[in-house]
Structures are given as C-alpha cells and as structure tokens.
Amino acid sequence: MINVKPLRGGGELQEPKVEQLIGKLGRLKQGKRALEEEIVKIKSVSDSLEKELENLQTKVFQLEAIHKEKEEVCNKLQFQCEESEQDAARQLQLNKKSEQLLEQYRYEIQDLKLKHRKLRMRFENQLHQLIDQHKNLHYVFTPERLPDELKSVENTKSQLLAAEKLKLTQLHNLDEELEEMKNQKQAQAAAAETQEE
Image 1 (tube, one colour):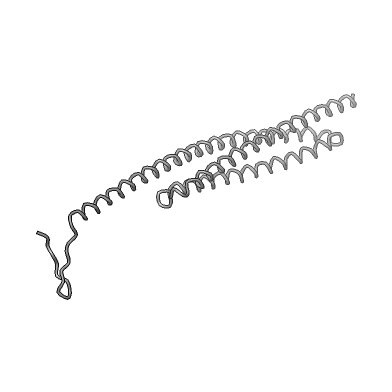
Image 2 (cartoon, one colour):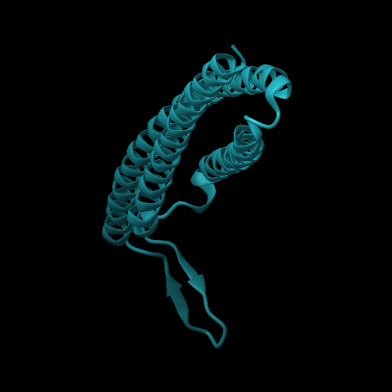
C-alpha cells in the first residue's frame, strides 16, 4: 500500500514511486563512478607533478654542489692572484699593466660571485614556489589548468639548465683568462731578470 500525505486544501501528495527512486539511485551511482574516474585522473596528474618536483629538487642539489665546487675554485684563483700581486710588487714598473689586469679580474670574480648568489636565491625561490604549488595542488587543481602547470614546470626546468650552462661558461672563460695572464707575467718577469743581468 502507498502512503499518502494530506495536502493543504484537502488534496493528497503521493510519495515517490519505487521506479523513480531506483532511477534516481542509478543516476547517483553513475555520477559517483564519474567522480571516482575524475579523482583517479587527478591523482595520476598529481603523481606526475610530484615526480617532476622530485627531479627538480635533485637538480637543485646537484647545482648547489657544482656551485660550491666552483666557489672553491674561485677562492683558489683569488688566492693565486693575491700571491701574483706580491710577486709583481717587486717589479712595479714592468708589471704595471699586469697589476691593472689583476684588479680587473678581481672585480670580475666578485661580480661573478654576486651573480652566483643571486642565481642561487632565484633557484631557492623557484623551488619554494614549486613546493607551495604542490602542497596546494589538491585544493586548487582543475584539469583545465594542467597544460599551463606542465608548461610552467618545463619553463622553470629550461631556465635552470640555461643558467647552469651560462655559469659554467663564465667560469671556464675566467680560468682561461687567468691562465693567460699568469703566463704573460712569467714571461715579463723572465725578461726583467734578463735585463738586470
């Protein structure tokens, strides 16, 4: 027997039929399945971004190790420059041009260190941004934003690689210039000793 409820004005309101309830339940189940599939897709994208973040973190650690190694090389080169200055002081007139070159290289080393420091800060800021984006991913992520997110990750990765390549090129050029300067000073010193004899 179907229960009826009295309506205002003397009418009656029938409760939903079983078929209607079954149909509604089916639609709800279908909607649930669609949501579960969407959740699986989002989880897959989230895992991919997390893997990319781990790769970027590994790259940052590698760059920090390279930076530390290059900084030690720069310190060693600066120490060698200071020793060369002490030797050049005994032949001030003959090595005046070399002294100016040494001063120029010193400024270039300081400038390069400053650029390295700024670059490292930039790396850290980008890493923090990526970590924050990853933490907030499950709150703000939508499938429509996936291409932009992936493009942003690729751009960041390309910038990091380009910056590393530029830094290594600058250090290589500086090594070559310092070696050439050292050879010139040795040749001038040998010439001065020959003249004194």
